[in-house]
Image (cartoon, rainbow, N blue to C red; front, top):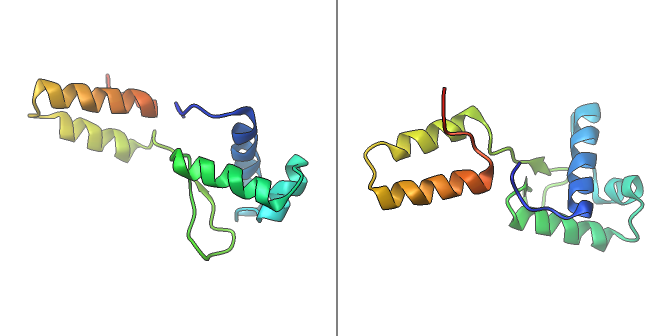
Length: 110
């Protein structure tokens, strides 16, 4: 994914991925707490909020089971970066390349 995550944050993401693939919906905070052996729901909420702030997760406020792992390596994202780079200045291109690098996008080839 290219993001700097702590071990706990990575564990939360991995748990979310596995749970969602198995059940076709995301886990509740209590299921994450139990699945990872965390001490409280507030600890889960803190990890989730940090992952949202880092851009690794998206959640719908007020909706249950709305956690979604964001994958910036989607074909559409790469295409948008490449399209934006056409006709931009060298300075803009450097900024876009830096952003792509931070997100772990492969802009070369294809």
